[in-house]
Image (cartoon, rainbow, N blue to C red):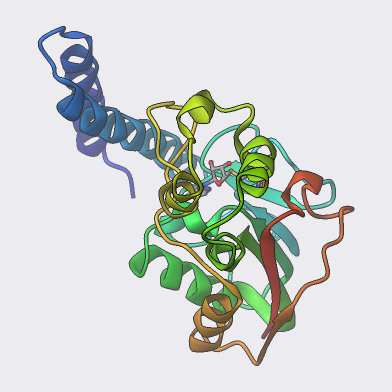
Length: 245
Ligand SMILES: C[S@@+](CC[C@H](N)C(=O)[O-])C[C@H]1O[C@@H](n2cnc3c(N)ncnc32)[C@H](O)[C@@H]1O
């Protein structure tokens, strides 16, 4: 449960980080670390505010859940994300705020690679298993590390196509110069644009099967991309699986 002490120390930390970031004497290396810390302080504020409002879990137990949908909210689903515009602002690294065996379908794409491995990723798979009803399913999509690794070293035309598809709208576009930069981005997705959170682990089909099997799922199979559910821009170079409890 939230205490005033935690929230005021978070507020104080947030103010100190903001002050340090505004100081011209703060060098680039320190500033990057402080920005990451400030982001965690802000996320923690959302998470704790929700925890205060719903100390147990949401009143109604939704049966279809999307996690980490960002702006791609799904109608008919209960959308959980760290930040707005989700239905429920929650940090899934702290668990899934739903009761055991109540969920029929849990959907997530381009989310898993943003949480740390093994603690949070394995915790997420275990939590998904816990909240799903028997026979319930989790559909997971991630950037396919095999897609980018299998093409190394790629011809310049192929590099150019991938850069345009993935990074044309990113501030880092001009710094993606060779195929190895693409490989780096799949594994790290790290630039200094505060709108983008890094990739903390890379996945392929085999790793997804292992992750969900270890969490107790009976079957883990490829999922045929369905744009009525998934974000259409994720079809290219992603890998999706459906795991059944
Ligand atoms: C790259 S975006 C993907 C958005 C959407 N699924 C799509 O494919 O367009 C990753 C999303 O995961 C959310 N996310 C990252 N870590 C999270 C966490 N610990 N708990 C809940 N959501 C998280 C982010 O806020 C963001 O909306």
